Length: 173
Image (cartoon, rainbow, N blue to C red; front, side, top):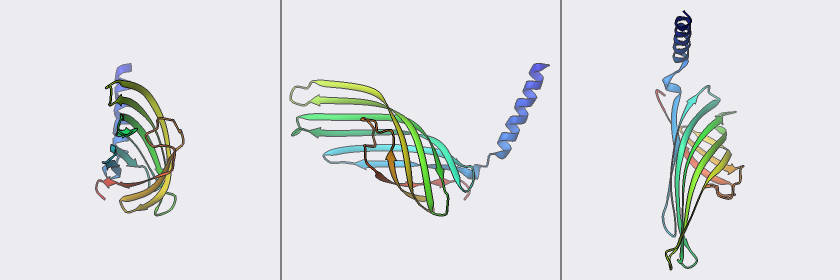
């Protein structure tokens, strides 16, 4: 009898939750970054979110970033790879304005190679990040200034304010 009651309660909650979910409030956004030259950067960061109201969007995503650089007169090569997961919240207090917070955790793999001797040193660590930002939203595009509050020495975002441009895709809008 207890199983039957639990089944009906679970079914009722599931139906209620699915009735409240609206596909047209689902959003897809993220980032793509490429830089080539003396310093190479490749970044892919998709995110999926939900518009809970006209003022608030929240979601989650993952990020992969690769950095490669030769230094000391091309005698050393350093590569860093980051894989991370994040959650985010965006608040739209007035039309065209956006404020965001995005905590994330990244796994970093770093290799330093002496190109003269071939000797490699490796390091792995978890890197915490807490991005905050503000900017403008122009239709599906967002222009923001962001800053990493965690300021970990190995942060993929560095220790300065940086800008980003984003694009959001939505269903049924």
